[in-house]
Image (tube, rainbow, N blue to C red):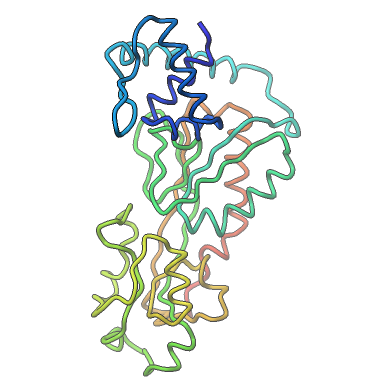
Length: 300
């Protein structure tokens, strides 16, 4: 039996669709379909029921999955017990999942630099305005706002970061001075779409002020930044996104400051895999080096 076919089976079982499994494997979806057909033919039983929304495991597929996962664990054990690769020989794929703003502004340039030093290493950065799930094998290393759930997971508090209330300097020049929370009355705000929040840690305005009206709401913090920059209204933005923008200024700097944390996690079984450990250690060092950007000091 071809192990590659079993590997394709496992990815499709976890992803649920040919397209998602193909993206994870770095192949075309027709290749996944062909591999699954070959495996079903060799076993003499259908492993998936084809439905409009994707592929659902049949009873035969459900019986096979834990056996293939055991094979996967055995392979990883062998990989971990092998002689570690020298740093310059790091090779293979590491997929890192993170929130959109943090992934784009902080991680992308750092990981690009790391990748240049290790040309045989492939790094996928999933910078998304939603939670990336380690349990669904969407990524090998996940950086999220929520503390990792208990289980066979290695998790650390990666860093704290601050958010502040910002407005365009042009916006502030066109309005009366804002010196207290009461002065926020009548202003329009830029924020998240409440019913699409992927983490309770993104609920900021309730701690500061209940807006009278929203000028724009978006699931994207980068879209919110551009809207505030354009003078649309006031918005709470991460310091690592907004602090260096010369078009923006903090509003109520002594009161409108929020601190949140990023947590990093990966499967515990992967901690001895050379490429995983190298990326994990690099991320901790790179983020620590950017502490002043992530958590600028509060005003005097």
